[in-house]
Length: 285
Length: 301
Image (spheres, rainbow over the protein chains, first blue to last red):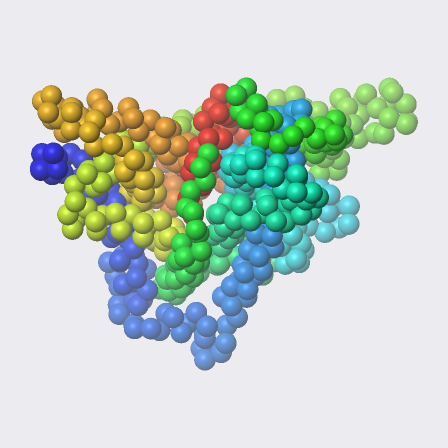
């Protein structure tokens, strides 16, 4: 049978692979190449070696902290959102698997914001934040910390429902007799949570942690729409910093591409760690 | 309904049931209240949106009903914001482009990637192994890594239009889709396909008459995840499309913010409502598939 199928590769594989080469492989390889060049379009490149990479950190011999700032700003943002989203999503999921009345409606409303895109979502909140802060003569971009917590609220509102769904699937998979057995043995609800529920949810927790981790690291739309990186460039997360370098100032495309390569390496490290740590890869729904 | 019973069966009924129901009713209404605030404000005069975003009159009711109702009349402008927003953004055109791009891309991804996934699972050679590994690899590459080169290549290949961008989405979305389809194909027993081939089916017939129908659950999952991604995507279309000619809904919304940061908030509120309505309608009809799609697609990352 395999032989019969093999001849059919132009039908089965060719269309996807042609698009894959245009949409991913060629841009990726050429992107790495361009990070070592000075360029404004893809055809006028000039090889400059690692100069783009040094220009990320040093401009005219002086230390430039913009990239480093957005690196730790992103890291902090990611840690905060990972913690809040997972704790809240887990708590809601626990409550919504107890069989209380209205569960379906609650689940539906918590999940709804996730379907609304990052741009639309951010303008909803920009209106709310700025009208509330106007009473104190402030805006969401008054300081980088207003911007920070604004972004945290928007992202939590968006992602808690999504993670809640995955946690619900995980909790429903815990065998009921395991919980019964623990109860008969006299476990109180805290012990039940700590010694039975959380250990059997470890695969789910790992998946949700890494989903929120990569989402936080790669966040772009909300950052662009809510704060635009303001004040100054102080609320730029990494993705927006790269975008700004690439399209904001002419002559810096090479540096932007070099930043993108570093960004790729960071995301790749996180993803590889995820693969190592995830014991079971799928949530059995 | 079956889902509800499943949830109920997974845990014993709690004695705090009623209290929890009341508590969660309040929380979940608060949770979606920002959407109601936007709907309310979309009917208000521009000047009143920021002055009093949560109220419906600029005069407090303690100063008498007549004054209060006059304040209500002054605050609201009917559908003025909507006509403004539609004219300013060309909303219906943008909506059409978004719909076309999303539907066409999802259809193409599901069709092409499921075929490709079946092939690379059934045929064992070096090339198929390399393709699979490349797909895995592409899933960990952030868009920023390819955004500049991809948009320039798309331009050079004349893909900067709603039809061309479908090919770009197929290419950039192939990794995840192929990964999810191969996971499923591996669980399909070979005997079914062999029987079809012995009965004289060509591989193409075998695929469309036997394999593809079996893959339907995964196809729905992939379709839901990719539809959510493509409909809400802003950066890729804003870089790839010729934005002077073609706008998606997300680009139209973002473009309401002028380059110097000024926003017409009346029009913005209206366009946000217009952007949310189709999503809510879609959600109501496809809720079951969306929730299941998210549950079984949790590997994405």
